[in-house]
Length: 332
Image (cartoon, rainbow, N blue to C red; front, top):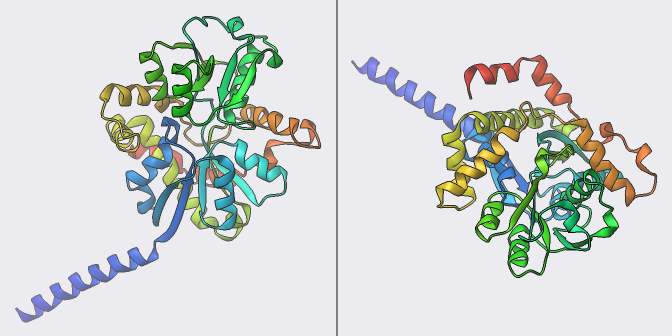
């Protein structure tokens, strides 16, 4: 009897020690992300569904508004990973920064062009004020590419830096702006205010790496296993978002701080199917990003190639190991 009790105690102690070892083995990381719109879903899901923890991370998510600030935090070591649009890391890399993109969750602009109700067609935008977050970002590029597709000269409109989505929505309701680009859930509010959703830019020809994961290039070399585990967790999060609606809705409800189920449902419906699994780059989207950067940098477009900015070798390894097929089969 005493022997049985002793064996049980040893087993319990072994399990407890194993749990402590696993907890101690977790890598503490800080992940920056740059806003609160629906296209932030993958990193929220990776954290909130316990996927980062499952892959050995004790992760903290920190919102850092503005791409430049997020890249500064990454370069300084304050964060180890950053989720945001490609425009910020590309600008840094062009100037010799130690950064590289390792995964792309969204290859389409997530924006809709929202206009005052009397502006019904693209040509009505001529002579009007269009609000963007700032120059040099995905907002500006989305507008420029939409104008190009509509054969409208960029100099026929006025682009104005007008702050974040909530600020621009207020500017629309007070008619300070004639048009802007918004993403769900702000587009739903825009409809309620009687504004006109002129076009969903995600449905136009133009593509763009809107939601990417960036790391320090030196970290990819020195801590490749950590980056690989992160990309595993991130990929699983994307798959969960695409296929497990209930879990995704719960993530959105918490992170968007929304109580209106209709808003959450429509935000999910807009984004879920647009996330890329596996999270690979659409090369044409990077070409669009580089075209914007090259206009503001010496050297010209011809000198900038997508391979300078992205390293998909981790994704290639996971593909060759059958990881993505395994995720599909397991449904996780």
